[in-house]
Image (cartoon, rainbow, N blue to C red; front, side, top):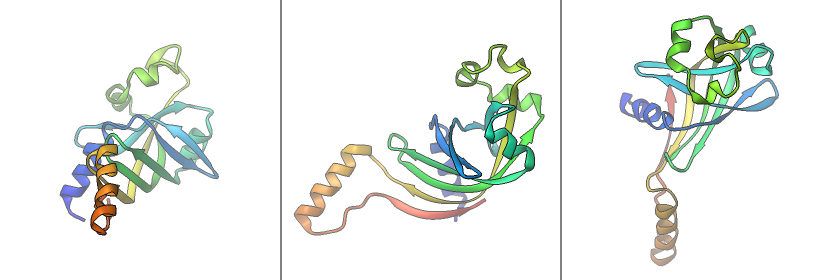
Length: 156
């Protein structure tokens, strides 16, 4: 797919507060973090979590995203690994992460995890609920299929 679609994917991802990250046979709610110009998705977790254990092995994982507000729905395949980059931790640290760690980003239990997306099936829509309702009504009146956005695959 085009660079424009990748950029739009990352632009919409910026506003999403949580996704479900599949590690092993579990789905875990995680907050994705981005750094401008960096296509890695960053997660902050505690060292003994299931995610940390899987990331320490360098494992493949799926990230499922759903945001009506951003009009982004995606099933992302990628690779998790542990990062010891303290500068990157400084860049992605936020109020959500600080709520989990008593000593902030210097807490001994903080672990930075990188997620390198490989591919994604993406659905993008515009207008949220109002557009959805409009499209459903329009389809009933005109007999035409609703236009709920686009569906495409990205390769990273």
